[in-house]
Image (tube, rainbow, N blue to C red):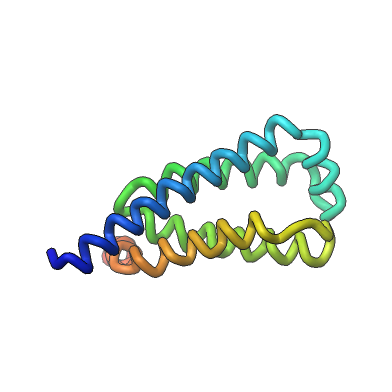
Length: 128
């Protein structure tokens, strides 16, 4: 393994750990501040069920980005989820998009950096 590749791998792991921590923090905040978040999701035309779905997806994503084989595919799922969060914040919620953009950028970096793992998972699924 070259020095550049080693550096890239270490940098990606740091991003993955930070991303997982941000996702867990977001999920915990949603659970502890349920009233205000339920109102926010109601503003979107969704109920408390969607809040809990997002919490489960955030926690699953936090775990999956720390599992080497799942890091790439999980990051792609998080990119999609955060695109929805950014759109919701800009159009309906009228809140700050900075937290969602932070997670989006970090997930995109992981998705890009772990693309080989994503291709490997895809090939294993297609072979079956």
